[in-house]
Image (cartoon, rainbow over all chains, first blue to last red; front, side, top):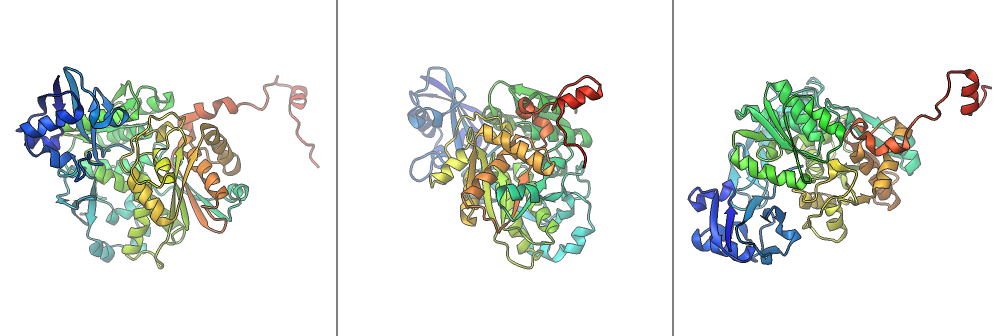
Length: 91
Length: 413
């Protein structure tokens, strides 16, 4: 599946300054693994030492928080958008 | 110039300059303002504060922006009201209400916005923006108008009509988003990256904005004669206000304004229809699982609270607890507060008072404690919540007979 990953400003230097990166993947987890393969450095920033998403990183697929879906196992449809967004906002 | 050394990540402790930054670039943890407390202690005094303005800016030494040129509509220094009649109903010996309904736009948000836009102007921003459940929308639009800044305010499209009108009247751009607050917040978190020249008060300026809530603690202590209370009950949406109120009492001690080290129990209040923080606390967890909100307390309807785990830390370490109350209890509590104390709170205030009842019944709030409940928004904003239960006692013809027939009033002795 062709998936567009939206990169937050804090991580854009890792992607050559780009706001989006295209990957081929079937799940959120594999999309993020693909991102790491294409642009090394992402994983240590968004995952903790246990391989879980950091507490202050939110990932959305088609505008839904993956914690309401199947987490990293959430399937991604062809031409869908996956957004990595800092969690600290609002209130 | 305020006594700010810079910013520091709460999680990994990386340090940053005092710029428009809100999350750590390494681990995405929240950034906190780092003060030079020794310098603050040397500058601040009870006398200096007493001689200051009757607003949050009397505590400027402990705020991250400068009082000179402050964007202020006069937020803060709201009444601390002794609530003996409500206290008697609840079996509490010494209860106070911090009546923050009396801020310029009717909620505590004026405190945080005054700080945020003052800092935003210092940083050179010309546009003020926010994601809001309503109270913040009012406040950002009003303060931006006052400061001559443009405003772009994002709200959920299902917001109470009163809060829409009381934002739009100030003339900025008001964008209603089809979705709940968490959807609006996510959009704004993304927009903040695309519009770095906009000061999103609760996104890229959030580090400074949140500090404004400390002034609630500062005022409570000053109004109690420079003493901390035993227990405060604070409504919880993102958890930021509760966290900062707890911090505020500690800072007063740190800079020498209190004679005794404060041991303030801090309790949180949530609506059962959106209680991710109270639920995590009750389950003994510290990580907050997001929920989809469904409550009349829309100003607290944040399903994915940014500071939830910090609020739990503050409550747990202080020996406080959490209330979680139904919509019916919220409405009853709004009416009880109004009937006993003459204070009309919006739904969030109903959540606070209903939670206070719950916590008092559970013995978490003790009858011998000096308790302060934070009522942080004006009931005129959410009249729909109580409208079904409040109306004329009777509707009559303009005659003495009609009055006598309709109303049973004891004859005067």
